Length: 186
Image 1: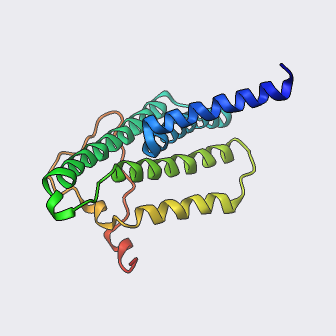
Image 2 (image 1 turned 90 degrees about the vertical axis):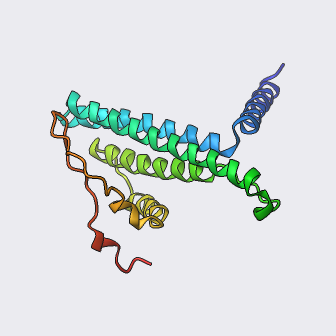
């Protein structure tokens, strides 16, 4: 077998594998896979950037892993909400919605939003390592992420539960925007 035939055979095998995985997972599965890959790349580039600048800390690395676990928890919560909505819309409320079938829309949106967050962080880490990053790329990713998150301005004030703040070894204050920051963003 000559080289062009072997290359065609390899391309066909890769195409068949991707097609099979798309049938198995769907586009939501690919979005989740991209999110997981972005999370891993962000953790690696964050570690490399911290080592390159001499600021690596195991406590900060652990915080980063906790942050990633929180993202996974949010994605799983979105998936559970999608399952509940799917049951309601596709069965219980079928007379109301007719032929409409609900998919995994929340999971897809959350996976894409977190992927954009991770991509922005990867770009920041690459910049810290000295790589020239075009400003249009950084601002473009930030704008897309902002547009994706703009539909949820009330989410900043969701916590109405009285809880004691955590003041342990790894306590930190979340960077939440003030409620006034959302005025007039419609």
